[in-house]
Length: 262
Image (cartoon, rainbow, N blue to C red; front, top):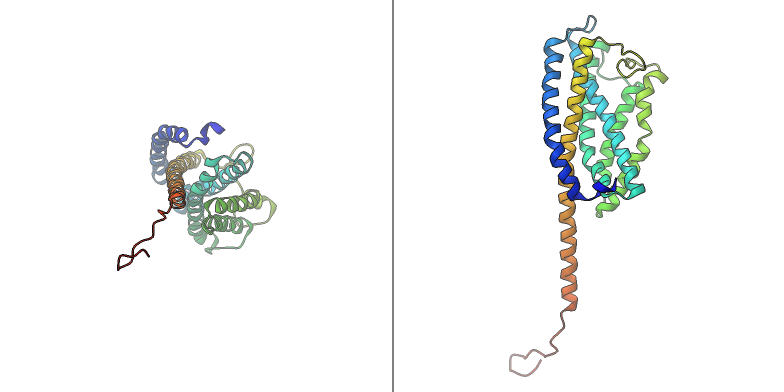
Protein backbone atom coordinates (compact mmCIF):
# COMPACT_ATOMS: atom_id res chain seq x y z
CA UNK A 1 0.00 0.00 0.00
CA UNK A 2 2.82 2.38 0.84
CA UNK A 3 4.28 1.88 -2.65
CA UNK A 4 1.78 4.43 -3.91
CA UNK A 5 2.31 6.88 -1.06
CA UNK A 6 4.96 8.45 -3.27
CA UNK A 7 3.12 10.99 -5.44
CA UNK A 8 5.57 10.58 -8.32
CA UNK A 9 5.01 6.81 -8.43
CA UNK A 10 1.25 7.29 -8.25
CA UNK A 11 1.29 9.84 -11.06
CA UNK A 12 3.22 7.43 -13.29
CA UNK A 13 0.60 4.77 -12.63
CA UNK A 14 -2.19 7.30 -13.22
CA UNK A 15 -0.71 8.21 -16.60
CA UNK A 16 -1.13 4.58 -17.67
CA UNK A 17 -4.59 4.10 -16.17
CA UNK A 18 -6.14 7.36 -17.36
CA UNK A 19 -6.33 6.70 -21.13
CA UNK A 20 -7.64 3.17 -20.53
CA UNK A 21 -10.34 4.41 -18.16
CA UNK A 22 -11.29 7.21 -20.56
CA UNK A 23 -11.60 4.74 -23.44
CA UNK A 24 -13.72 2.36 -21.35
CA UNK A 25 -15.97 5.24 -20.23
CA UNK A 26 -16.47 6.47 -23.81
CA UNK A 27 -17.04 3.04 -25.33
CA UNK A 28 -19.31 1.61 -22.63
CA UNK A 29 -21.18 4.90 -22.41
CA UNK A 30 -21.85 4.91 -26.15
CA UNK A 31 -22.97 1.28 -26.08
CA UNK A 32 -25.08 1.83 -22.98
CA UNK A 33 -26.84 4.89 -24.38
CA UNK A 34 -27.56 3.11 -27.65
CA UNK A 35 -28.98 0.06 -25.90
CA UNK A 36 -30.88 2.14 -23.36
CA UNK A 37 -32.58 4.61 -25.68
CA UNK A 38 -32.74 2.81 -29.02
CA UNK A 39 -32.45 -0.95 -28.64
CA UNK A 40 -34.22 -1.74 -25.37
CA UNK A 41 -38.03 -1.96 -25.40
CA UNK A 42 -40.33 0.23 -23.30
CA UNK A 43 -41.68 -1.28 -20.10
CA UNK A 44 -45.17 -2.76 -20.31
CA UNK A 45 -46.28 -0.73 -17.27
CA UNK A 46 -44.02 2.33 -17.21
CA UNK A 47 -43.69 2.86 -20.94
CA UNK A 48 -40.87 5.10 -22.15
CA UNK A 49 -40.29 6.60 -18.69
CA UNK A 50 -38.44 3.42 -17.72
CA UNK A 51 -35.46 4.74 -19.70
CA UNK A 52 -34.73 7.12 -16.81
CA UNK A 53 -33.62 3.99 -14.97
CA UNK A 54 -30.49 3.70 -17.12
CA UNK A 55 -29.16 6.93 -15.64
CA UNK A 56 -30.84 6.87 -12.23
CA UNK A 57 -29.73 3.42 -11.08
CA UNK A 58 -26.03 3.70 -12.06
CA UNK A 59 -25.92 7.15 -10.46
CA UNK A 60 -27.36 5.68 -7.25
CA UNK A 61 -24.81 2.87 -7.31
CA UNK A 62 -21.97 5.34 -7.81
CA UNK A 63 -23.24 7.66 -5.07
CA UNK A 64 -22.85 4.80 -2.61
CA UNK A 65 -19.66 3.40 -4.14
CA UNK A 66 -17.82 6.73 -4.06
CA UNK A 67 -18.79 7.34 -0.43
CA UNK A 68 -17.71 3.81 0.51
CA UNK A 69 -14.35 4.39 -1.19
CA UNK A 70 -14.00 7.69 0.68
CA UNK A 71 -14.69 5.95 3.99
CA UNK A 72 -12.09 3.30 3.17
CA UNK A 73 -9.56 5.97 2.21
CA UNK A 74 -10.30 7.92 5.41
CA UNK A 75 -9.67 4.77 7.48
CA UNK A 76 -6.41 4.12 5.62
CA UNK A 77 -5.35 7.71 6.25
CA UNK A 78 -6.03 7.39 9.98
CA UNK A 79 -4.41 3.97 10.47
CA UNK A 80 -1.45 4.02 8.07
CA UNK A 81 -1.04 7.81 7.65
CA UNK A 82 -1.20 7.35 3.88
CA UNK A 83 -0.93 10.87 2.40
CA UNK A 84 -2.68 10.09 -0.88
CA UNK A 85 -5.61 8.46 0.93
CA UNK A 86 -6.57 11.78 2.50
CA UNK A 87 -6.14 13.55 -0.82
CA UNK A 88 -8.34 10.99 -2.57
CA UNK A 89 -11.10 11.54 -0.02
CA UNK A 90 -11.02 15.26 -0.74
CA UNK A 91 -10.82 14.72 -4.50
CA UNK A 92 -13.68 12.21 -4.68
CA UNK A 93 -16.21 14.17 -2.61
CA UNK A 94 -17.44 16.54 -5.38
CA UNK A 95 -17.72 13.58 -7.77
CA UNK A 96 -19.83 11.62 -5.31
CA UNK A 97 -21.98 14.65 -4.56
CA UNK A 98 -22.64 15.06 -8.29
CA UNK A 99 -23.65 11.42 -8.70
CA UNK A 100 -25.97 11.75 -5.70
CA UNK A 101 -27.55 14.90 -7.13
CA UNK A 102 -28.12 13.11 -10.46
CA UNK A 103 -29.69 10.22 -8.56
CA UNK A 104 -32.08 12.52 -6.67
CA UNK A 105 -33.04 14.57 -9.73
CA UNK A 106 -33.66 11.59 -12.01
CA UNK A 107 -35.50 9.84 -9.20
CA UNK A 108 -37.89 12.77 -8.93
CA UNK A 109 -38.38 12.81 -12.70
CA UNK A 110 -39.13 9.10 -12.61
CA UNK A 111 -41.32 9.26 -9.54
CA UNK A 112 -43.58 12.04 -10.77
CA UNK A 113 -45.38 9.97 -13.46
CA UNK A 114 -45.11 6.68 -11.57
CA UNK A 115 -46.07 7.74 -8.04
CA UNK A 116 -47.95 10.92 -8.83
CA UNK A 117 -45.53 13.04 -6.74
CA UNK A 118 -42.03 14.41 -7.09
CA UNK A 119 -40.94 13.42 -3.60
CA UNK A 120 -41.96 11.22 -0.70
CA UNK A 121 -40.28 11.03 2.67
CA UNK A 122 -39.80 7.29 2.64
CA UNK A 123 -36.71 5.49 3.96
CA UNK A 124 -34.82 5.09 0.68
CA UNK A 125 -35.27 8.64 -0.60
CA UNK A 126 -34.63 10.21 2.80
CA UNK A 127 -31.44 8.20 3.39
CA UNK A 128 -30.10 9.14 -0.06
CA UNK A 129 -30.85 12.80 0.68
CA UNK A 130 -28.89 12.41 3.93
CA UNK A 131 -26.02 11.00 1.86
CA UNK A 132 -26.10 14.13 -0.30
CA UNK A 133 -25.95 16.31 2.82
CA UNK A 134 -23.01 14.25 4.08
CA UNK A 135 -21.13 15.02 0.88
CA UNK A 136 -21.92 18.73 1.19
CA UNK A 137 -21.03 18.70 4.89
CA UNK A 138 -17.66 17.14 4.14
CA UNK A 139 -16.89 19.73 1.45
CA UNK A 140 -17.80 22.54 3.82
CA UNK A 141 -15.84 21.06 6.72
CA UNK A 142 -12.54 20.49 4.92
CA UNK A 143 -12.55 24.11 3.76
CA UNK A 144 -13.53 25.56 7.15
CA UNK A 145 -9.99 25.49 8.63
CA UNK A 146 -6.98 27.64 7.86
CA UNK A 147 -4.81 24.55 8.31
CA UNK A 148 -5.61 22.10 5.47
CA UNK A 149 -4.48 19.11 7.56
CA UNK A 150 -6.98 19.87 10.32
CA UNK A 151 -9.75 20.23 7.76
CA UNK A 152 -8.95 16.90 6.12
CA UNK A 153 -8.81 15.08 9.46
CA UNK A 154 -12.11 16.58 10.59
CA UNK A 155 -13.70 15.68 7.27
CA UNK A 156 -12.38 12.11 7.53
CA UNK A 157 -14.11 11.71 10.89
CA UNK A 158 -17.38 12.90 9.36
CA UNK A 159 -16.98 10.44 6.45
CA UNK A 160 -16.37 7.50 8.80
CA UNK A 161 -19.34 8.37 11.01
CA UNK A 162 -21.57 8.92 7.99
CA UNK A 163 -20.69 5.49 6.56
CA UNK A 164 -23.38 4.02 8.83
CA UNK A 165 -25.88 5.49 6.37
CA UNK A 166 -24.77 3.18 3.54
CA UNK A 167 -26.35 -0.05 4.85
CA UNK A 168 -29.48 1.95 5.69
CA UNK A 169 -29.72 3.02 2.03
CA UNK A 170 -29.07 -0.50 0.82
CA UNK A 171 -31.55 -2.35 3.04
CA UNK A 172 -34.15 0.38 3.62
CA UNK A 173 -36.54 -1.18 1.09
CA UNK A 174 -36.29 -4.47 3.01
CA UNK A 175 -36.51 -3.07 6.52
CA UNK A 176 -39.40 -0.63 5.98
CA UNK A 177 -42.45 -0.35 3.77
CA UNK A 178 -41.62 2.17 1.04
CA UNK A 179 -42.83 3.25 -2.36
CA UNK A 180 -39.40 2.51 -3.78
CA UNK A 181 -39.15 -0.84 -5.50
CA UNK A 182 -36.90 -3.53 -3.94
CA UNK A 183 -33.58 -4.63 -5.39
CA UNK A 184 -33.90 -6.25 -8.80
CA UNK A 185 -30.28 -6.51 -10.00
CA UNK A 186 -28.08 -6.95 -6.91
CA UNK A 187 -30.38 -9.41 -5.20
CA UNK A 188 -29.17 -12.89 -4.30
CA UNK A 189 -29.97 -15.31 -7.09
CA UNK A 190 -31.26 -14.37 -10.53
CA UNK A 191 -31.93 -10.67 -11.18
CA UNK A 192 -35.62 -9.94 -11.66
CA UNK A 193 -35.09 -7.85 -14.76
CA UNK A 194 -35.16 -8.79 -18.43
CA UNK A 195 -31.82 -9.14 -20.22
CA UNK A 196 -32.84 -6.47 -22.73
CA UNK A 197 -32.90 -4.03 -19.81
CA UNK A 198 -30.10 -5.59 -17.77
CA UNK A 199 -27.36 -5.22 -20.40
CA UNK A 200 -27.79 -1.48 -21.02
CA UNK A 201 -28.01 -0.97 -17.27
CA UNK A 202 -24.72 -2.79 -16.72
CA UNK A 203 -23.09 -0.94 -19.62
CA UNK A 204 -24.07 2.40 -18.10
CA UNK A 205 -22.80 1.24 -14.70
CA UNK A 206 -19.40 0.42 -16.25
CA UNK A 207 -19.38 3.83 -17.98
CA UNK A 208 -20.16 5.67 -14.75
CA UNK A 209 -17.48 3.72 -12.87
CA UNK A 210 -14.83 4.44 -15.51
CA UNK A 211 -15.90 8.09 -15.57
CA UNK A 212 -15.38 8.27 -11.82
CA UNK A 213 -11.87 6.87 -12.23
CA UNK A 214 -11.06 9.50 -14.86
CA UNK A 215 -12.44 12.38 -12.80
CA UNK A 216 -10.83 11.11 -9.59
CA UNK A 217 -7.40 10.93 -11.25
CA UNK A 218 -7.77 14.43 -12.64
CA UNK A 219 -8.83 15.85 -9.30
CA UNK A 220 -6.19 13.89 -7.39
CA UNK A 221 -3.53 15.28 -9.71
CA UNK A 222 -4.78 18.78 -8.93
CA UNK A 223 -4.74 18.06 -5.18
CA UNK A 224 -1.15 16.78 -5.37
CA UNK A 225 -0.03 19.88 -7.27
CA UNK A 226 -1.85 22.13 -4.79
CA UNK A 227 -0.16 20.34 -1.89
CA UNK A 228 3.25 20.82 -3.56
CA UNK A 229 2.54 24.53 -3.98
CA UNK A 230 1.56 24.80 -0.29
CA UNK A 231 4.75 23.03 0.78
CA UNK A 232 6.90 25.30 -1.41
CA UNK A 233 5.17 28.41 -0.09
CA UNK A 234 5.71 27.23 3.49
CA UNK A 235 9.40 26.55 2.81
CA UNK A 236 9.88 29.94 1.16
CA UNK A 237 8.17 31.70 4.05
CA UNK A 238 10.36 29.83 6.53
CA UNK A 239 13.52 30.66 4.59
CA UNK A 240 12.52 34.31 4.43
CA UNK A 241 12.00 34.44 8.22
CA UNK A 242 15.31 32.67 8.81
CA UNK A 243 17.14 35.08 6.52
CA UNK A 244 15.55 38.06 8.21
CA UNK A 245 16.52 36.94 11.71
CA UNK A 246 20.02 35.82 10.67
CA UNK A 247 21.03 39.13 9.00
CA UNK A 248 23.33 40.93 11.51
CA UNK A 249 23.08 44.67 12.03
CA UNK A 250 26.12 46.71 10.93
CA UNK A 251 26.46 48.43 14.29
CA UNK A 252 27.30 51.79 12.60
CA UNK A 253 25.08 54.71 13.40
CA UNK A 254 23.63 56.47 10.40
CA UNK A 255 24.67 60.12 10.04
CA UNK A 256 22.21 62.91 10.53
CA UNK A 257 21.56 65.73 8.11
CA UNK A 258 24.42 67.87 9.50
CA UNK A 259 26.94 65.02 9.14
CA UNK A 260 27.20 64.09 12.83
CA UNK A 261 26.48 60.52 13.83
CA UNK A 262 22.88 59.87 14.69
